[in-house]
Image (cartoon, rainbow, N blue to C red; front, side, top):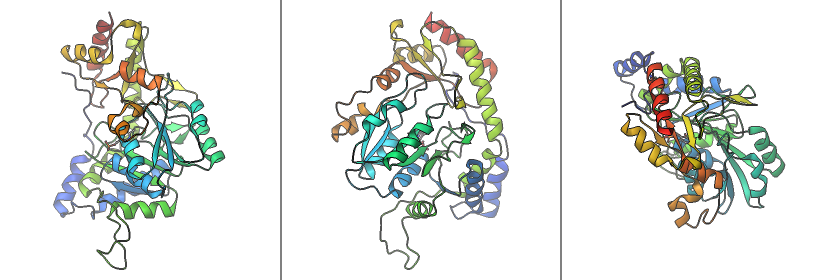
Length: 369
Ligand SMILES: *Cc1c(COP(=O)(O)O)cnc(C)c1O
């Protein structure tokens, strides 16, 4: 079986982990945490970085830090992971889903304006799969309507938008270091911001909102979302190789495209947009309805042929848990719904070999025939 993802851990990971064990620093108090935060902040071009336990919690803290009120609305793409909507709902706010662009699979920026109301307070911009979402129109709308911007850059380490790093846009941005992301700490996440106040708030939320004056007395409820020194040690080692990883992802994506281009009925990821070259976090494909095949059946057949796959995200407006809460009920996002039904991604991990890529492409072409 060709796995859908396998990370590369062949740099200084072992050395730095051994350092943690040799020195006894394994908790969040260890020195790699601070070092990872500082180096990550520099990479992204932000003043502050706050390391947390995973990317979902990074979103929880980032949204909570904005201090939204019950009933405040936050716009987000329908085509994303549940973590985005969950963070909004847990903050007491209301998610408002916007449909996807059929080519980039990101939020369709032309549709955002019609979703803005008097209760809108923020836009969550999420970069999906390999191309950033089109930030300039999003920032302009946010500016015009006084909205905060949260940028979910979980899939975009090392990517840029018109040359500026993803993770440096808006009020606050988040990352994930799950093993299928460009750099991994096993589980892990990061919040980055230029705002001293938001950074301080997130640090407090990360650590149970302890107050300095009297430990164990709390004015607010936080979480324990601290990252351990062991995770941060992996992060520092992985960050050293970010450039190499990105180049590798780009050449893997280019090879897939070369091998799959022209296959009838298959939509491949765009190689580039006006503002960025694809980074191919995952190599997604969408099967045209006319082939009479949906993603579930395609993934079943590829699995039988020894190729690991994962389905695309499922639209937020079709999430049972949200609909039962009366959220996004009856909302239509036809593009997100179609690509969710017809789309999936093929093996895209950093450890994938050229031979494996050729085999996968061959199996995909056979599937379509
Ligand atoms: C992976 C991912 C997350 C969640 O990160 P975890 O570390 O798995 O919790 C959030 N948003 C996006 C866009 C992601 O791809």
